[in-house]
Amino acid sequence: MNEKEAGRRAAGAMAGSALALLLLLVAACGAGSGGATATGPAARRPPAAVQPGRTGEPALAVYFARSAGAGGPQLVPVRRPLPEGVRADDSRGRLRAAIEALLAGPTAEERSAGLASALPRGVRLLSVELARPVATLDFSRELEQTGGTTAVATLLDQIALTVASVPGVKGVELRVEGVRVGSEERPFTGEGFLFQRLLPPVDSQLVKGLAPEDALDLWIAAIPDRDAMWRLMGADLRARYGRPEAVDTAAWAEGMGSYRNYTLEAGEVQGGDAGTGEGRRVDVRLSGAARLEGTTENVVYIAHMIWSGGFWRFDGGERAR
Image 1: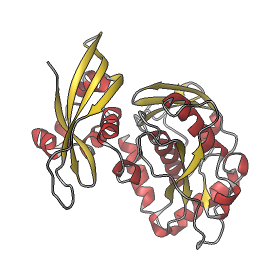
Image 2: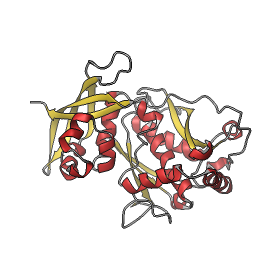
Image 3: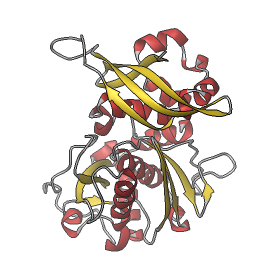
Image 4: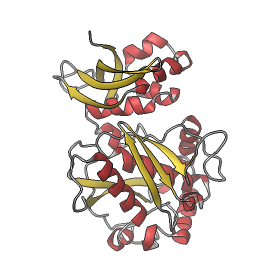
């Protein structure tokens, strides 16, 4: 996701004219079936947002865009009820429902409060696959019927954040009509966006609100994206490598990056600054199957998590004996 991240940051630094372009694009292409625009009194408050990143949240969090001045669009989580028949512990059902709600676009009330969506009109969700912590979403070709760096970056972040709000899911492999996109062979849209997986921005409120178990999901989903891994590392693990270029992403991918459909259990949080919480540590026990050296075996892994810089980071670990 290195190139896509760079594109998003460059877009975020654009002046207000870029934001105006995004909102004009949204108005032109619509937001789901609602055909949303981003007009409306700036003083109006959007509907109450969910608290992102909370495991067990009984509602869905769906992310839409709101004007934030020269800093670019601000993505805001809004609440959607769980559809009838979808259990709170059904991650796949919650994921599908959340993406369908995203495709439906903001409500009339939300549009009048200035919320909009960068997803083009007519996009359909074709399939959902889930193997904790990574989802594979396949959309219809309409997903790529948009243009402009700001609009495309916002679209991708809407998907990444909406997906990451579902417990046990923190990364997205994106397909269009069955073909994986974001690679050198198949960039996303005419803007040429490249990424391995979509991940929520590290500086988002969602990431800052993650529990240690959820942060470990995010770390595993980030493998083998070297830049994302470096941003999610604690100080001890960074010191082991010294610089991002020294991280052996292939080894991580063959090891911890292969863990899927596991269970997590956090221990007791210890230490840290009494005022800020900086330096708090907790071990998270991971139990499940992993594909190691071509074979599948059950593993138990103890991950060391540290609270640093406003969120939980992965700071190393070892397989339990």
